[in-house]
Image 1 (cartoon, rainbow, N blue to C red):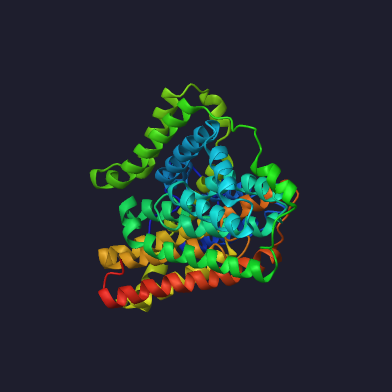
Image 2 (cartoon, one colour; image 1 turned 90 degrees about the vertical axis):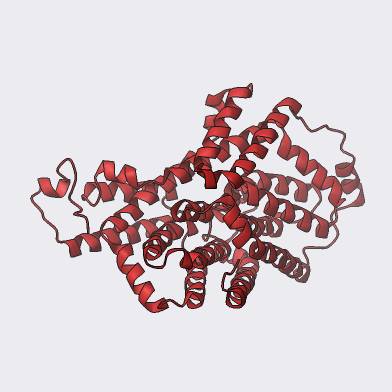
Length: 454
């Protein structure tokens, strides 16, 4: 184990004349990790980004990591990917693309609640597969609130539906859900790997999830006819045109298409997803007639800093050897039985991700599996896919299970439709349990029959 005090400059503990044993340093790293998690769960009192940064600062202050080591523990492939995709989506939004999609979707639904549910859920799932789901719900949630209130429907069930759709749809690809971004970076997996090994099971989970939401909303009376005929007719015949910038939209969609293509073919030739997204988004800023300063103001910096803080806190655990010990224990438990590993990793990931944000959990578990990979090599690839399915789908269990959940909850409260913890669980928890069980069960069966699972 590397000496945690191996830094260029004395730490605060060194200055105070305190020398801690390796065992004590490990205990301190774990304690700071747990405290950071606790603060994240208390977001009503402390913003999650502040919690993560406090944890990162504490790690450096006590000397678990030097500032240089902390900086080196940040996975910039993940940061660049999120930053690049946020910029591309912001330009798409400026072009009027999302407003245009919302108008077309509303006309397509003709005000029928069932069509509204399925149309916006499917749209959210598709967008979440090719954008990240946090960015998708940032745009879809306000659109859904506007559409359903104009149609005389209650927004909360429909908002919960797009949360579930964003997490299940986002499971399908490398860029769809932050846990997948982390897994892809840590495990060295590309866009195509997720399409082959995860997307089929995510697709099944998405269809099952929307169908179950349909049943629950029907049972609770939320799929009754919309408001008055006069109101519906006014909405459908609204002559106000959607403001669009056709040139900017063509530029953004072209760059977006190239980005997706490079995601698919870039990994084998050494182009990581983060570098692709950063490069293509920068090129878009070059050709678009927009102020980069104004666009950068719309970047979710709090989300990026949240990731960076967590990477540092988790990096401290890795530095003192925690993941190496956990990987050894997991290796002994699995004992070469990858099928057991699928159930163990996938099931535990789903349950834990439901009660702690799946981003820090995935960062932690990915570090464990990376240690395990040194022993099992590519034979353990199914465990990466089990982690993806468990962490992403398990994020639907509770309101704090995934970042997209919190984002939509904040938007809903701002729009005057707060989503309580209990109200969310009435719909989401049973759906999450069923979809996770179906996806992991199906994956386990395919693995058992083929020995490959993909």
